[in-house]
Amino acid sequence: MQMNRRELLAVPMQSAGAMDVQSGVARRAGVLWCTRHRAAGPGGPIARAAVVVIHPSSNFMGHYALEELAACGVDAIGMTTRYIGNEAMLLLEHCVVDIGSVVRHLRNEGYERVVLIGNSGGGGLVALYQNQAECPSITPPPAGGPPDLTRSDLPPADALVMLMAHPGRNIVLTEKLDPAILDENDPFRRDPSLDMFNKDNGPPYSADFLARYKAAQLTRSERITQWAIERLAALKEHTRGRVDDLPFVVHGTMADPRNLDLGIDPSDRAATTQWGPPDVANLMPASIGHYTSLRSWLSQWSMRLSNGHGPQRLSTVRAPVHVIYGTADPGCYPGHAKMLYDAVPHERKWLTPIEGAKHYLFDQPEHKRECCRLIADWVEEVCRAG
Image (cartoon, rainbow, N blue to C red; front, side, top):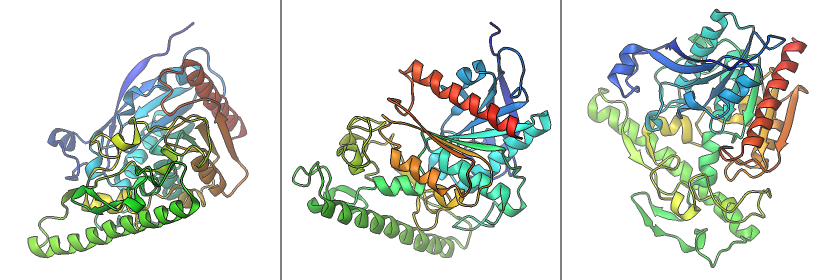
């Protein structure tokens, strides 16, 4: 059997001079780095198709699905955005521009079909991309400034795959935001009546507790959003416009009751998170959303202002969409998959569970093969349909 070949792709970046690229070397180079695994075996309907696996900030150049997808007969690209390893300054709108650069590069190379795979946090992002590629409307990001997506080069993709994906960074963080925190500077000043880790509250959690909990999460998200808006205005005045952003820390970002109460949005998952026990992941620096900036909060995490609400973006998308989820995923739930699927306004949509699959599939080779074969077969079907 012919082995697939791995190549390094250097894709020219649009708007390469932005200071939100932390590394001066990367900023001046103006390159988005990707890996491509060339398809093994003979050609066929998908010989001129490429799938691109996407996340806003994770390094997907070594993504677990690339080699297996290539073995299934499709060229597989793992891309990075300008925010690789730098979630704290991330603007979703710049990520959209970066996807456009990669899609344009692949079109120029001769690919007849380009399919975007939004994995995990990439789901809401590819929904935003396709929404703006088909009908651009976003001029500035929520905090103002570039990019203007109506003036960016955003070639539409031919289809979207939502793979083990949540519906958007603003949605998922709000669902995990710890409402028991009373002081944004002190995670240990807590309201015991809203503390999911207080055994007096559960699990299991009552309907009344969950209703109060969700309302308090939304209130906390809005409190941070309003503070960020006011802080940006004060910063502009204080620096006379010379500084347009400041960093800050968000405590308690992994407090979703579903991680302890398996009766909420039932699935085959264990009572844990992708980062380990919920009470640890809630405070540890490595889990989501702890480090951000004023502008970045408004772009990617604010429930009110972020443009990354996946279901809203999918509600106008005309391309085919396949939502694939694992029934044992501890962080992206069947309810998330259903939200994405239900939002697609046409009938060229699919919703497929992979029984027993976890979020990363690292220790599940059979599930990984099943998942990649499912994607490759679907891409072939999309290519045949034209």
